Amino acid sequence: MAYDEELAERIRDVLSGERGLAEQRMFGGLAFLLGGNMAVCASREGGILVRIDPTERDHLLASTAAFPAVMGGRTMKGFLRVEADDVRTDGQLSTWVRRGAAYARTLPAK
Image (cartoon, rainbow, N blue to C red):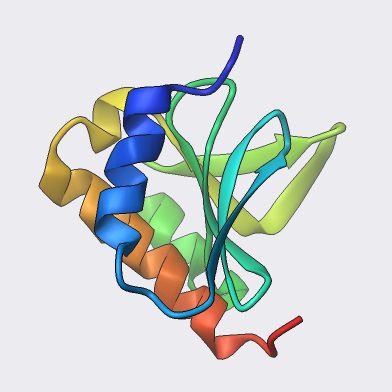
């Protein structure tokens, strides 16, 4: 399954105007990078993969509909998956995209 082009366009809209924004095919989806660091990805599995501060992981898992991101059988501690139904509205999507962008901006540029 390919990533959702409409979802990718919505992510683009949220991130428009960000300095250092780039797009790259990653993880079978379309990733949005800031300063070379992935912030969020329109996933081929539907929904998004969002980069988070690993110290916030447990809190976000307990307080949101997000769930652990697993790739190649390994749980990725700095990423969460959010289903398409949970980013259906612009407000829902914006919250996650901005969270991913905020964390990506704290990382050293590549």
